[in-house]
Image (cartoon, one colour):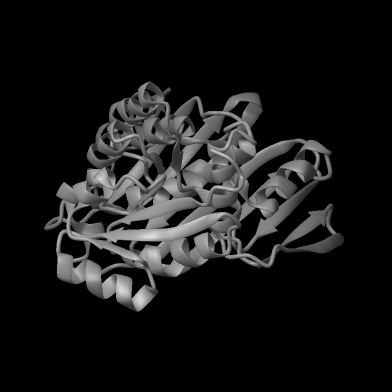
Length: 332
């Protein structure tokens, strides 16, 4: 695949995130074409294609995978369907950009990675912040020792979900606070620590009717005496946040997971020295990640922070459930 060849994207599902995040970001990416949309209903696909100016509308997911002109698939299905359709996409020879979490179990995630490896296609989990300039800058500041030795990461993601029909509250579809929101601070803490945790302790509050967690608190222990306290919830309007603490300063990050065209964070050194860093990318949140993914497809970049990185987060999720059930710290 050459740089002169436009990469034709197919979107598998008419989920809202495609409208709000993927489509505008892909259209802001050089060499990307939003080419096709697939739904389980031809009428739904036709309406979506008309409303969002997409050339091809397909009335089944399999029809999208079978389309010979499509190079890459964006999967935004419910969590429980990620594995099935990623593996089918790989078997059809399509590269896959899959929404987070990659899967609902670590074993499922490994099966997806292996299927894509065998098919010689790329698989990316859509934690797009890891390819955003803001995240690289945070790592640079830590590596330069500006806040001293990294000691602690505090991060969270909270928002209100109270409609029982919302897929986030449906257990069979991979619902729950930790799967929908908690994977963000877990992945962020792993990215900032540059390592995987060695232990997990968790407390979960479950919705008795839905059977999914609606609030989860975690304590992660990392190598080199680094710790993280993380929180996710469907019961509050706290939004997203992160605080990275070293023994000589801290980084206050208001938008850690979806930094946009302009992003900023505070660098605080000691008790009285602080500065604001603002990064201007001029692009929607997914654009840097889509651009990187396409460069990897063309062989212009070495794949990093791809789907194999998801295994560490899914193992933390599994350990969190075990810890919440047992009331004990779980070693990884």
